[in-house]
Length: 584
Image (tube, rainbow, N blue to C red):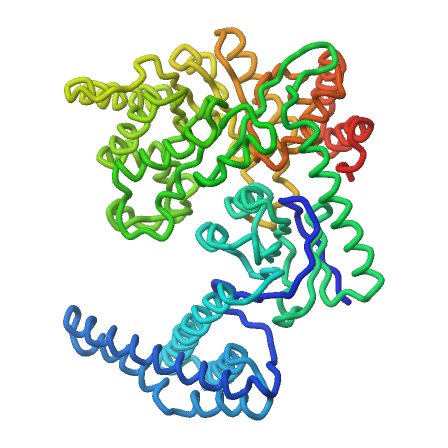
């Protein structure tokens, strides 16, 4: 039995068979197959080699036509390495003689060849040959791993996905009926993949460091999404302990959810708090009323671009928004965030955006939309049309200056005029809001408040930009902390500006769904929280168990503390009194 620790990003306990997916860098752990699977594995290897060779030949022809034969021959050399050479023979021998999985066999053979070329010296011919070998490895593994992901779709559950990291599209494609949890070596608490885990309502642990080498495909795995624990090949006593914990969590969560579903989130001294859901996909709208949400405070719309080769049409946008309105009715509002896209998440060919050295500080969100007005106006038209059918509100992400916000509003006004001219109905009084996600926006919140009807504080990015700590980088996970006093000061600044100008203010980052922060946020003056629906019952329990006066006392003390660690320890202590079963 081996135990690893990472960052818990979605609660619950899951037990199942490991499905090990490869890393982006194709670092493959050594895995074996059963003897009766050797022929099947050898066939997989042969098919992958043939497919990779075909791909190399196709690239050779395309590059030759475009850049000439000398450059094209590079890919011809790749094909030759794959077509009946020592690489193919030795890899198949490892599969047949040592029962190695095809991926492991390819990696071992390629690594040996690459080292042999590297040992020949610094001559550029040998160095380039070594690079060719490694490129061939990537080609073959890409073919094999495509097969593995296809196998994932056909394997019965319960499964636990193990990977170096998962892309948003890979996470979105997981079937929670069969995939009961996932664990990754990389990632962060507020990464897009972590957010999607909450949307799927499956336990997840990220940033566990290198542990894939210790996991055999099919091994029994436990993922503890409460404490950030991954157990590989657990013994019987540990299995029994976690089976009990899994059953207890499910019973407790379902009981709390059913008990509180129709009850309001109101403090013991009468302060009503609106609890809204964060959703990624239209189908998630059903989760909101099931968990007692009052509406949707953050409807992320990036899903419209998953696995697409072209921008979605206005009708596709409109249909997705109407589906949510119908599923929620009469629970509203539905706050739709305009596209929060960038090269770090998606990069459509139509955008004509070059890869960026630092996409988090580059052309993303409203910056991208304002550069591509066709893209922007398509979505704005759909949102305005949907506003005729219910309480739809629009929210602009990643606004960093007053001029950016005004430019967004100007484009929205142009779209309104177009709809007026066409006689298309929409809500002329639709509320407009902006997210506060960067320090510059927080610092000019008093100016922004004069321009909009509401604020929504996106703590995931606000923490990242305030502390200069990439929220997806496990190496700086210790720095990324919503409880840092610098972050709390900015949040208080935004809340004060909203109150001064009598506009609504909400928090929609992952911070809002963590019960440890509930008393703090209430005490700082928030009367709205937007969170993953799965987390609503616990947060509602805190609200219904506390007085607003007590929350203000907790907030005052937390804001007085000097370090994030002191703030977290204090908040855990205060929350444990009200909800001890979900606070470590």
